[in-house]
Image (cartoon, rainbow, N blue to C red; front, side, top):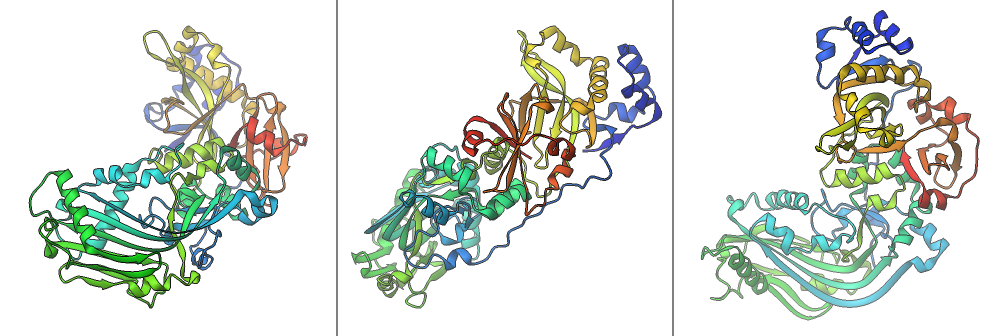
Length: 561
């Protein structure tokens, strides 16, 4: 977004003198060019940012490594509380490659109260088969939505798009017209153990305020939300199964040109016929073959049907760990040695996440704006970006309500743009203003008069050291989810206290009257975020007053800076 600097002499005079008539305001603005006055989405700078203040910069980036895989050989609860890439992962449920980094400090929870962690030996086998003729059908026939906690509304269409991309990569070298193919998936799970971390609402709140990993907190405040999602994934694992898994995905063309339901039933028959399994748990015979196809399963001809096979867990040398996409004609894959290798628990690994066990990252942060940005970025509502915004304040029209004719009524207020791009809107008892008073703000003459008054009282704003702009074209509706808006009413700098929570390294400046708080992270005694926002003098002169972290978490509206 462009911003025009209008610190010409006439403008400075306009904004520093006392309020005069609306006509005088317009006369003073005549010194600006037509381009400046008519620019539709451009901010006009009233005060420049203090040149001695640092700009916002990303501090923490995690580089992927094999640490997660190294800690999960055998049956272990070590991956509880880790991040999970449901989106932008492999799109194979329970694949270890979807596991990222620890979000919850499991060992601290274990020391605090072992009963939050549970593990059970199951020794069961489960087979899951489903087919889909289109990727819209994928979201209905698969169990992906069941894996996500019931309190989170996942945009499954985004998942389906990602699944389509990975499926195309799998089969693009062997099949041309994938758009006309019918697909199916098989997962044969040899379950050894079940591990779970208590995930009630109360438990999640406890973990959020006391047991987040240091690296996650550092990255939460040191990088953009999109970068955090890229590094950690969209969800947190709270419940999973270990053992071994044989997984296969199929793609083929139906020879009888049936409708969607018929094609899917035909593909399921083909999948069932291709699997040979005799025995129980890790004993017996296991493989994939084309010899079982007959007149009831020939809707998908072997030469026109393709399969990709991958095993999870087990001895890599016992059988083929991965069978690249190939035709099912003359298919004969023996996985019995791999199955037998699962008897050695050292060969077990995570193979699936339980239903209702993936909780969004938003459930494990206290900051309201971070919560909303995590969810809306995951679901594609908010745009993605990887660099911080250097904070500034812009005076804009912000919608308060509608009148009886359903016309929007706006107030003119300062809006803080945070490093994450969130808009913190500082209302001034706007709801108590009459419709007639709010309607006047549509007039640019009176809008500029309000701008003049607010800028003359700049010291009362959240920061008087960062750039101050105005924009007479933009209108913000804070009830919409893009841009992300947080509304604060009747902001007063003198009503705040400060409290440093050493366990997480987060400092809070909080208002016990309004029950709002701003939070920022002090990274190894590096508190330059105060200078990035230009609020060091204000914050360092606030009285320190202890408050419990539980009180902040349960009763305050926390805004992350």
